[in-house]
Length: 151
Image 1 (cartoon, rainbow, N blue to C red):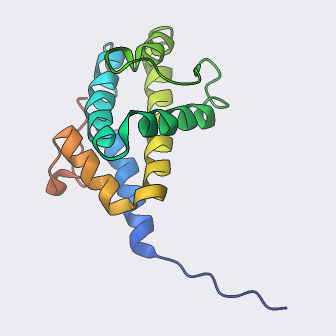
Image 2 (cartoon, helix red, strand yellow):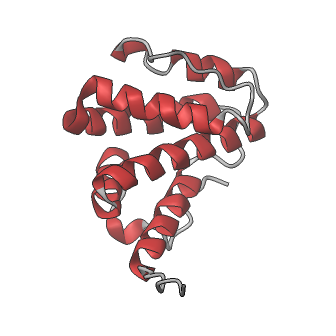
């Protein structure tokens, strides 16, 4: 029996690549303060997403992203649910502080990418990108064409 043709959505692929590129550009490339800069990405993003899906929705997405990222970075640990909002990323900070900057950056990028991939699957790529732009103070014209890393 012949297979049905696969319908591709080139715009979706481009948007996904743009989102991944945005994450890469906003995480520090050569910085000793990776953990501080990582939290500066997670906290505003979490605030935006929590307004849409609530604390438990965000926590579920976060734990799922951690569980998908953990096979690549076994030192990333996940609890059943993150702590209260004031300490939501305490465990992530602890895990990243135990690493040198490059593995910490790589793990965070994969975690952010995985998290936003899951989010985009649920709410759509366009809304996900709008949330990220709003959370991170990025103008649509600034991404992904510009290299925003502090090198």
